[in-house]
Length: 403
Image (cartoon, rainbow, N blue to C red):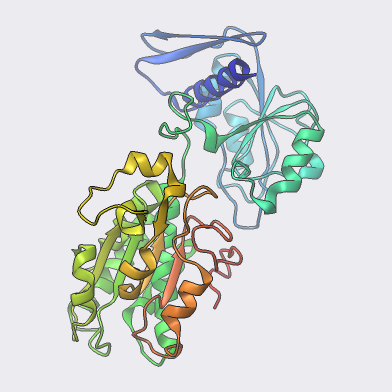
């Protein structure tokens, strides 16, 4: 029922506020059966009904070291009467004894928990029936690769609180409260530079992009940023003179993913250009002592069917009636793009950004030309057969690229 779903959403939002609140004016939460009440208080956080939560040991892949709650979050919850059970893990970024010191109970069994928290999808064979789980499920768009997980959740009568669905007001269009998109943009852009360096090398050109390591190899973000700034110094000094064409990065989307990617991109010497400047830029021969960036917005991706060229683009109308629009990105932007950094939200209601036939047309007769458009696709949003139809599969941290 709608009211029950809304209450669940609000409860999940408050639980996150409980986990991250440190001081100041915070909200209190009371759970009485299925009822939820919230109110403000001067400081602190109190649960008046004793509850228990569990923290899963992540198993999605060998690289997953994140945790849904930090030890200091656990300490706050335990202080307020919440029992916290933690599955031991040798790969988690926090050590088991840090959780124990914070007051958590280490155990392989989470059957006593009212709510079980993870980061990525858990092992579906270990799901506990009739429990409430919170994690990034990646099922809200009907993703084929997670359909079995969703079926198992339904079969076991599990209540899923998907982090992607936790929004400020409970509305689908409201800002998300739990989001790693910006960090996906950071990591995706770092790996894009490394991949571009490898692509140029395969065509016989050595570029400073090769000096960027994969994102996971850096100790922290500052280390990665320093490495990219060093690459920027090489570019400024003429390291791209071997290329007689401009290197153009086109960014799609205006959310956390795209903004994170652009933040990393801006560490290089660059000039941002408008879409209408791309044709002239693309024909400008080198040498170039900077790279170029372009932000493609909705009006550069689609056009309303039958609209006059002078008619202003109505974003709200497009979002409400996407079936009335035709894709134009492949003609207006893609022919002048070296690297497409895709960060848009997409589902089946919207026109595709690029189709298979678009890619074939753009590359026809130029497969070995290093100056061809769409030399590289960096699809950080990673919708399989989604906005970019020819994205056949996702990649992994250890193998981030494929041809």
